[in-house]
Image (cartoon, rainbow, N blue to C red; front, side, top):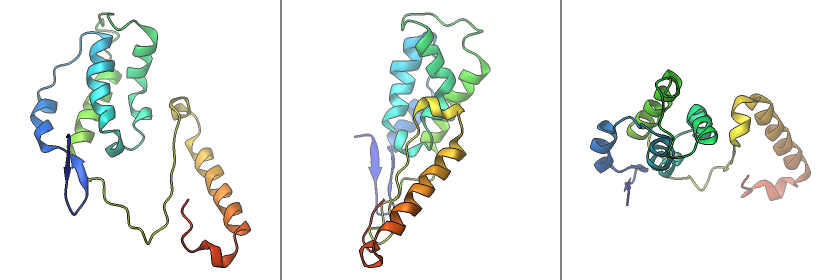
Length: 147
């Protein structure tokens, strides 16, 4: 189904490696959005900060219709780098490890517009919110708390 599952964790299926290594550069916006980005989004859980790493591709998808043929200027070095980054991120380690139930869990999301903003400020705000929550929770209730 697109994933190899093992005791060490999960990773993109090895059967997808030849497809990614021979993937041709897109010539229109549809080739970027539906084909490559759609494929990469399926594996986005393996790609930290996925939305931030496809910013130039997103810009093309927002500016042009899917049938728009890309000029050499539009298919810029930045777009090419993002495409190569997606391919190599899917093909490379580390694999997505299984959660350890005895350790605390933290979640974090980044909306696409925040990618060019201040991620450090967002992380600090989340840390402060977590600290406030922990101060409010009684010591006996902290065990088993998942954030």
